[in-house]
Length: 255
Ligand SMILES: C[S@@+](CC[C@H](N)C(=O)[O-])C[C@H]1O[C@@H](n2cnc3c(N)ncnc32)[C@H](O)[C@@H]1O
Image (cartoon, rainbow, N blue to C red; front, side, top):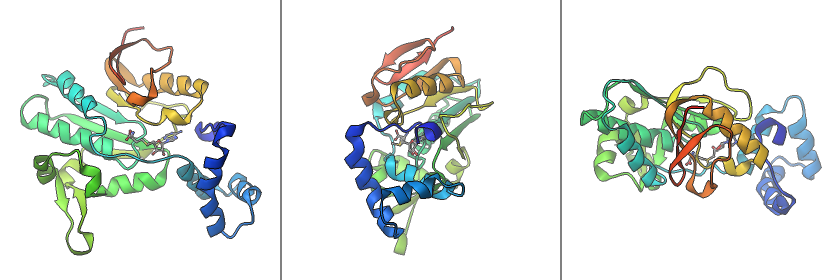
């Protein structure tokens, strides 16, 4: 797991790992953890390996998580009417972060604060969350930080059996693409981006992996571009020069 996707668990996490995998092992009718290990280490194991990664990581996310990050983004991008804008949500999970950003940019475009040429890419290692991100269907609770005006403008309300669910409007979905990307492998020709979100994923990595992932991701950010990590993730230890702007937000400086 460490080699393939960067996941790192200290011995103290043994009980957590055991409890996260237990019901899966039971469901598959396996006898014990050794059998499960043999299964996911097998040559034909991609699907189950992915399932194990999903169980061991959390995909938790919601719209406008850490609202102060979006406030700063709005302030920083405001007035950028000429240049195209390209944004990457680098561990996008179900897409909440990417669509939140799309709502913000669509509003800014409507008010003439940015031009119309902007796009957002969301990537994650999990096919399951990516499929869901493309469908863009969410329980209302995940949109608790979205204003009623934005919900009205950018969401379609489910009815009947879909009551309590919303789907992001096709016009907004069009602006956001999703693809699979493992942050622990080399990244080729993705950027350059003006803004990168790498929030709430570094927690799974050990110090060396964290540093390597941050530097790798930052190769895809323009000089002067904005870099976001989760505010609970401390400082972004890396070799790329960064200027801190507010907790979890940095500007990439010239080398
Ligand atoms: C807690 S979610 C973060 C979602 C969003 N960025 C946020 O802050 O709300 C972490 C995501 O990181 C993804 N992830 C874990 N390891 C990864 C890796 N090596 N490469 C890409 N994504 C990874 C998980 O699949 C999960 O969807």
